[in-house]
Image (spheres, rainbow, N blue to C red):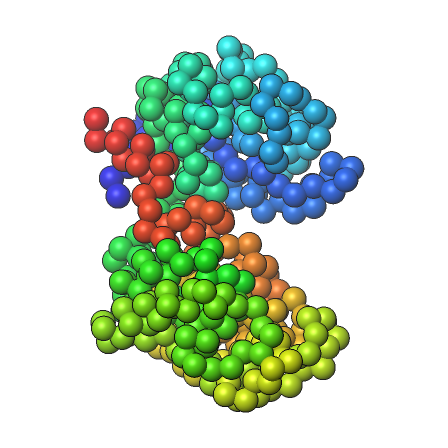
Length: 397
């Protein structure tokens, strides 16, 4: 993908003394008192900020936080806790500026955080007037928020249209490189894991991947629908019987390419969806009418682990069972550890997937962990993200 990269601009001396506007993803979880409970996104944004400061730029950073009403400020919408945390991590004061659209005072070597960009009227609808005002604030616009790359908003897309220079920050660049490596130029065999409660939410992803991958592992409620398509009983498990034909079409598309969708050989079932519900392992053909399938069984997990260890590239989105309950977590743990042990390149994304990676402590063994949920899914679906599209367009002007 031909885009300008912030690192290259710095190397070319095009940042020193310039006004740099960084769109980061600082949308972090907070408790009821406004205390930040998890700061991964903040820490992931610091390399870009440090690069700009070290290059002698006048640095402005903004982000959304939550889903505020445009033009209606409430204290809980403020980036004040984020400014404080960035200051702690950088060891410097980080002033927070509100009402910044019409002008910001910032000198080379200084850093200011601009209040929640979703408070600006016209942000969500990518209002051209707002985007032009934002672009006028800077000499260089840096998009470093992959989690917002699938949205065409004023602070992500519009500003990139009108800024003098628009480029990708290190975090966004890393995402582009990982996605390209995994999906556009993968080492084979390419194996994808797509799991979740419903086929309907990921049907287009499954259809798109069926044209690309050598193995398509399905899990969770999605796997139950595929089991129905294979003529297996699923008891009272979560499934979508009306999408059996679509599941069959994915299976047929894979088979036509000499690829496959492995159907579970065995499963872990319970009579209730509870953490302490008695669990039992059954052959996939022996699921009773009152059973709930809550995980894949050990034979299935071992079979899938062998496929993953032999893969050249792995794309992982979603745990294969109810891993939050220990009795139904073995399948996801086996899959996770197989991915970690695989010599192939792996890319993982999605909130539940990241939670599983954290639970099993395998962060360092995953090739790349994507920071974007919805953006990651849209890439898997084969869509061109607005952020990629506009940055590529600007680079080719």
